[in-house]
Length: 243
Image 1 (cartoon, rainbow, N blue to C red):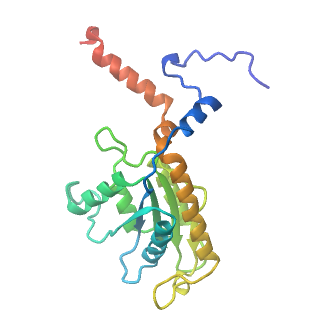
Image 2 (image 1 turned 60 degrees about the vertical axis):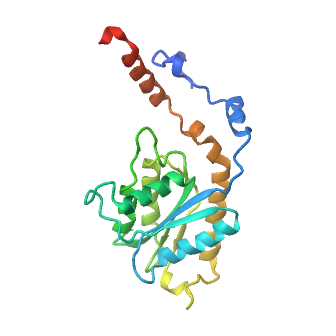
């Protein structure tokens, strides 16, 4: 049953935006960019035969075949968070790639029921803001994991939490490869299987979401609370009586 009083006395009407059909339709029917989607891939292991890296490399092949521009970040040499300055070359390389990207793939092994420290360190080096820019906000994200034993979803669940915290548009589909050591051939290529088909599904979905949202990311993540806060800060700056 609806309340009798439908008034909104606490709303700042100057910052109110109606998310109606017409507004959304106008945002999504404008002419979009035509360049290849820019996808950054991160993996979470430095082992010589890293299965998370091998999955990411296969994802790169799929994304390129689907029409994306792809870059893979090698975490080797990345310092622990807070153990170096942000000017460290590997930190700058990572941040530049994050800024460049329109979508991302995160793939971590599961270790002790969790993502690896290597995976978390990469995400921890990505700031929530660089000056006035939020480098991950509104960008698409696909999360994946490889398991040494039976299938688990601990790492992808944690990656989803981080993606939400980084204000990314995390796609619904995901991949978890059980007993990954059995899923690759002697040439380090993933074998045909249901796991492989699921990886294809995830990359296909990531491409669709990236193409559909990259031109409308600002619209999708625009927030009433932040509009109000920005307006209040502006008023403080221009209100001479407050000086």
